[in-house]
Image (cartoon, rainbow over all chains, first blue to last red; front, side):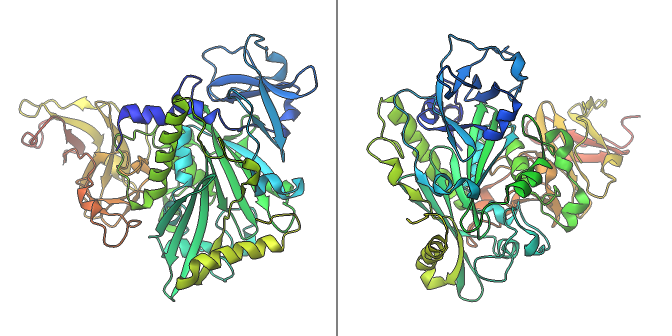
Length: 407
Length: 142
C-alpha cells in the first residue's frame, strides 16, 4: 500500500505534474503514420494536452496546440476540417520511426533515440499499431512488468494449434521445444522473478523450473519511462509504450519487430482492425459490453471468459481497477518485484527532475545510441545453465537475422 | 453477471433497521451466481459458493484492484482471474497460486465482508459497525 499523495505523484501527468515532467524528458509516441489518411490535420491527445499533427511552413511534421472545449471526450477525434490551431500554444518536434510518430514535449534539446531493435530493423520488419485503454497509464505499464499474470489471466484451459498463431502473443511453441507456450504458462504458475536495473530501465527474468531438470527462462524488459519490450513469438518482439492521453486514459502503441522475415503487415493490421474501431482505435470489447464476457467460456476454455485475444484480458484487468488504481488498498507480493523496483526508479526520476537534474535512464551522461537490444526472448535450458542459454538463444537469432541486430 | 446496479431498499423491520435488501434470491438462480452490488457507495460482489452459501465481499481484489465480478466461481469461493488469488465467502484469501509455495502472505489478506442472510426470497445485508444485529425474522417484510 502507498499513500494517496504518493499515488497522485507517480500517476498524474499533466504539464505541471511531477511524473508529467519525467515523461516529457522522453520521446512520446503520438500517432501512427497511417493516421495521416485522416487528412492534413491529425488530432493528437497527449499528456493532458490537446494537440494536432500537421506540417509547418518548412514542411516538417510538428505537434501544434489545437483549440478544444473543456468537455471533449479524452480520445476525441475531430474531422481535419474542424480543427482550429491555437497559435499561442506550444509547438513540439516530431520524428517518424517505422510508421510511428514520436513527439518531444519537454524543454531543452530532445535526446537521441536509443538503438533498440524496433528502431534499427528495416521498415519491412516493423509493424506499428495502437489501442485505447480507459485507465491511467501506470497501471497499464505495470501489467506489462508482471511476469506472473500470464499464467492466470492469459491461461488457456486447452492449447491451440501453434501453427495458427502468427501475429498473436503466447501462441507459439516455447523456445526450441514442441511444447506450446500456453502449456508452460499454465503448468508452471509460480515463476521466480529476478529484476536487474539496466541503462534503459529494468531487465526482468521469469524462471519456471520444469519437472525434468530444465528451466524455462523468459526475459522481458521495462524501458524507462513507460514502455516494455517482450517476446511475442520466436520470431517477433513487442515494444509497447503506455502513453497517457490524460490522467485517466491512455493509448498503447506497439512496434512489432521481426528478426528473420518481413512482418506480414496486412495480416497483422487485419487481425487488429477486427478488434478496434477507427478513427480513435477504441477496442470493440470494452467496459460497456462487459468485454463480451461469457461464463460458459470461462468455465471451459479461457481463464477470463473474454475470448482468445490477450489484449482484451489485459484491458479488462487494468480498466477494472478504476480510472486510477487506488494503490492505498493494494497488497503487493513477491510476484510484483519488478513493479516495486520500477516505482523506485520513477520516484528517483521525479525527484531528480524536481531538483533540476537530468540523471535519468538514457539521459544525462548516457549516450542513447549506444544502448542496443534489449534481449527479449524465451529459452529452455538445463537449470544450471539458464543464464548462458538465454543469451546464446538471443545471439543465435541475431546472427541469422538479415538486418544488423548485433549487440 | 454484471447487472444494472440496484438501489437497495431499507429493510422495514422494527428490530432490524440495519438489514437492507440487496438482491432477490432469484437473481442468483443462474449458472454462475455472481452479481455486483453497490451498498451505500461501497462496490461489492455477491456470490453463492459451492455449498450454496452466500458471500458479499469487496469488489476489487486486494492485490492490485482487479474486478472480482468477473472472477472464477470455483473451489467453493471466488478466484481473481488476474493472478488466481482465491477468496472464501468471508472474504478471507485462502490461496495465492503465483506466490512462492512457502508464502504465508495469504493469511494476512482479507477483503471487506458484509454479512448476508436470505429470507423470503430476498437477500439482506447488514450495514453498520460491529456485530450484526439479530437476523431479521422470517416474514418480517410482510
